[in-house]
Length: 216
Image: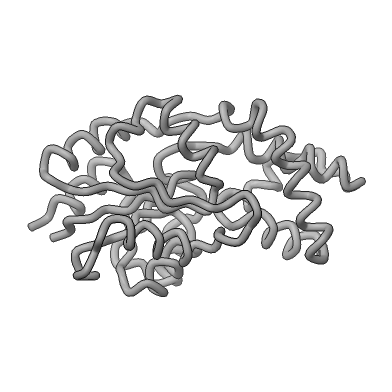
């Protein structure tokens, strides 16, 4: 059914909760904003950082840019390693490759950090393409990284490609590029969010995801 499978990273293949929330907390502290509860910062997992700082704290463009820079001060040193691979990911990726699928990462996280994380968990070997954000923010929206991944993969038949993600941003970014999205509930969005956004399918487990991706 699908020859090309694009994956979001955070909340889809990995649980980056600790590294992201602690790095956001660090950035807010540097901006003189106190947020002692890191669980209240989990909404930062998924969307582009600049947009989320602006949306959540009313920051203008320059303040959101500064907050993002502060975030990366911590994330680039320790935050990217405060991460866990979801159970079953290597087996899933291996099975997809065995069945001839071409795989890509399409994430709003900067490419430099994506590559480090994939290498950390030794799953970089499974991906033909890694499409992430640029550090200067010129590329960062979900639709942009999905478009770049499709172009690098050489996809001509959009019905042969699908994005797997856990947030409404993933569903919307896929739709803006004419491909469908399979939502996963073990990330940070949940079934209701994904269904309301228009996900083609929503699955609860890695084994269920494998079944869907290998359907004929």
